[in-house]
Amino acid sequence: MDISERLNLNTTTDEEVEPYLEITTALVQKRRSQGRIIFDRFLRNRIAVGGAVFLLLLLLFCFAGPLVWKADPNLPDLSNVSATLASPTIAHPFGTDDVGRDTMARMMSGGRVSLLVGLTSMLMSLVLGIGIGALAGFYGGIIDNVLMRFTDVILSVPLYLLLFVLSASFTDGTPKSVIILIAIFGWTYAARLVRGEFLSLKEREYILASRTIGARDFRLMFRHILPNAAGPIIVNATLLIGTNIILESVLSYFGFGIKPPDASWGSMISTGQNLFALDPWMVTFPALGIFLTVLSLNLVGDGLRDALDPYMTER
Amino acid sequence: MGRYILRRCLQAIPLLFLLTIAMFGLIHLLPGGPEAVLFNPHLTAQARADLRLRMGLDDPIYIQYFKWLTSALTGNFGSSFVTNEPVSTVIGRAFPNTLELFVSALVLALVVAILLGVISGVRQGTITDYGLTILAYAGIAMPVFLLGLLVDDLFGVALKWFPTSGTESVAVVFTNPFSAFLDHLWYLALPMTVLAIAFIAGWSRYLRSSMIETVKQDYMRTARAKGVGPVALLFRHALRNALIPLITVVALDFGSVAGGAAITEGVFAWHGMGLLFLDSLDRRNYPVLIAMLMIGAFFVVMFNLIADILYGVMDPRIRYS
Image 1: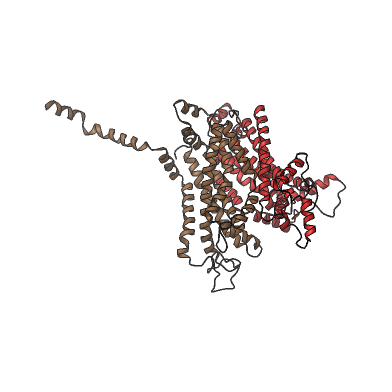
Image 2: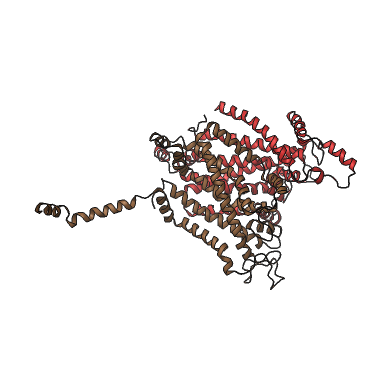
């Protein structure tokens, strides 16, 4: 008893233990998962967070806006029938279109379509492109040849020709079919970009190092190489959003997906272009919508890229 | 490398052959053939039958394909359904215009995109970088049609610096071939600029992102420690290693040269492949369409091969097994 009490007193005096415990908690907190590190770094990048917030505001404008702004996007303003092609006023903050519909209400309903189509088809294209490009670049040889020649084939078929052919047999397109059609054509750039990066990155020393400690191919591809190829993928993703929103309107011209009187930013631009001399506002707002979407998405993408970059010092 | 290039060229032959079948099939799947779209509705039944016979539309599709293939292999692509000229003449008129437009836009865009991409990449996070970012995305979000109109209105209509449309001065006879060439360049300036702006916006983004990664590499510090000057450091050491994504995208964008740039060509009445393609598609001009599609496929395959070769030049670590 005496001895054990004495031992206890000797080893656990308060002054000795507390600093030790503080150090351990600090160390435990520092050991974060890779995803957590990336997320924390992203949150510390104020401009990237600003982009994310702005993107949320845009989504809020399109999805929650109609709760506040009650104008009907598909019907002309019946209280003032003569108000066609109007410039922005208090009654119509974004003006009206050629048949007197409120542009702000159409920006909201059109934005829902455009953002949905743009974002989902971008994600689908990226998944396809990254998968194909990673396999081709990593394995090389026959796999590379087959996959890249297939890419050449897809690149060789002009979208317009295929749309013309399909428009005869396919008449009732839903947004889902539009998204799939855009994604089928959209993955080629991502695939070639990812493959190019993989061809170069797979020869680096760190890949040899992880291979020698027994990393499997799948782990090498998606855990080690892919984060280092993030730069061009993110640029491609932001550019794809813009192209896809415009493409959607080309598709609706061929009778796929969104049909008049329903709006989308792309179709608002193509109608507005013909009336540009009479009313430049009709193009300005949807083009501004696309610009702000692409820009804020790019800021988010850049933040993500910086967060993924091990050379970036902690800020 | 030589063997790799040879193998890729040999691979291209069966690929292009398969594509002829696919393209031929696709064209014939177009709704409403030449008879419904192109023929004068007032033709008598006899005249209709004669025309169909002359265009070879009565044969079953596989016979039409073999007839086309055998004559195409000897270099004869048939004649246009619309003007009855040889297809080579029709395409020979449009292709040089498009090639000029693309090559000049490519050179301009490459120079500007590389400069802007390097500046943005090196000065990441500065006001300059954000300014260039905003400009690039404005260029991307701006519809090409609108950009064309604005450029045309400003430099063609308001300032009268450049002609608003066309490819050369009409009703002017140039005795000196050099002044005819200058006249042509004068017409080229605006459409070239519009096409280049679209390229610059995208390309500079790719280069910026890869420059950001390259300038942080250890060999950059080594080169600086050895006393390499700032310009050589950026353009010889950093740029070369940052070029792979740019090479990929430039090859892809330039691979579409045979398809032309329909919107830009439309705004400036620049008679190139883009307008010819839309017109041939509208009128179901099968012989011109199939020839254009195959030229297009050839360019896609060729430019992607060039890109693959350039990867190896820029990064000697890349080896093709």
